[in-house]
Image (spheres, helix red, strand yellow):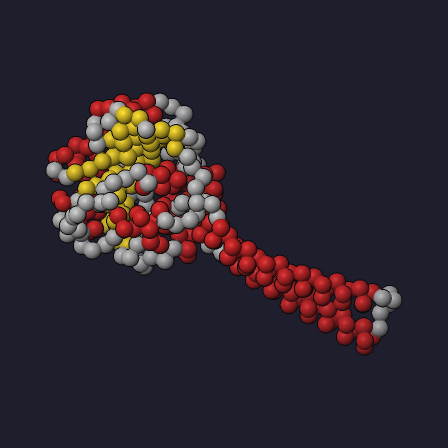
Length: 322
């Protein structure tokens, strides 16, 4: 259970920082040390939960070394690669702080900007998300991010102009509600907004990567969009329902047209009108039936989806493995 705290005093809070780790062995130590230096300079209590997303490089070895060197560091090793949002969610399951900060492992989210998140948080917001002054991403990545933002605005209600990012501060109550949500794909950004009472943005700096390249590509952006739409929205099913209803009306009108024409002018081919009317009516009913079934299946899907598909291989705390 979280300890007693004063949510109006940034210095009284215990901060948990969750960092998904993938292909960052060469710069992860810099990220952690700079983050620890920031908290120590402020005199704020913190822990850093590093979630290794089955990285193929030496990231886990670096995490184990950091956990031995710093009592504030907790390392979580995932059995298989699960993606950034799953890694974030697993990190949330291992935090013990009053508030949780999620950030990237490449120092594009400067730890010094945490103070801005905290200042907004103590004003009464239970979710504060960094809105970048200028994103240091390629044109392709920015375009993909804008599309994901567009999808988010239509699925997850938020204040006008709200922007999502992985640099955020989440209140413990919001975290608990997020962890209780049954979903096969825990989309951290959307869940945080959905479970927050008072989400807010604050403008923060976005720096260049200190090394390497972004792990996001077109395939991963498409997969992310697909997962958001099909796990958190009935939009595809409702689109199909609209198409099905439209086709059922069209086929119905088609049937009426040929029935009337057959009665008035007859048919050059005996039985042709009857066959066409039957096919049109049966197709109309079939589309309507599939549409109704789709709506019911969508409702069932929202309730019965699996909650967990990611498994932890190992946890290290100050050199001790669980």
